[in-house]
Image 1: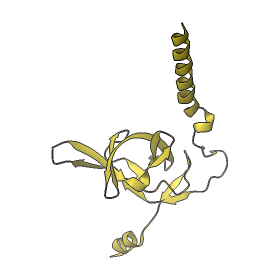
Image 2 (image 1 turned 30 degrees about the vertical axis):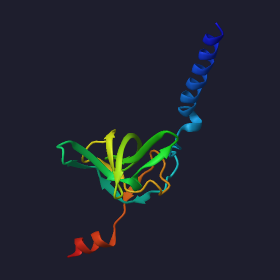
Image 3 (image 1 turned 30 degrees about the horizontal axis):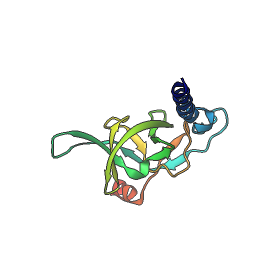
Image 4 (image 1 turned 90 degrees about the horizontal axis):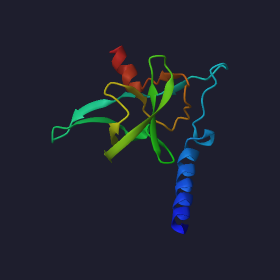
Length: 139
């Protein structure tokens, strides 16, 4: 009977830790849509689809696009409405500044190229124009 009590206690601790990560204190801040929200200028990258040497399809993004909240790994997906929305992903291996995404993103989706720009879930974003892109568009 004592062993069962210890197991139940441990199970409750594990469940409270898991559900605690999903409580309000673990959530990302949302942009207040009713107030005027500043538009964040970010580089926007497209999720790239590649085939590795073994013939397996991979989805690749820059490592800089990824942020972590506890055990969760996420990116800001830029939707057709021009807003950054958090998407939790299943990361794979990383090399040379790139990360293989095992789940959570599809080829062709647009993500913020850097998660360190202070974005919040639901914030409006504008594609940052680099000098290289500007020069190419004027030639």
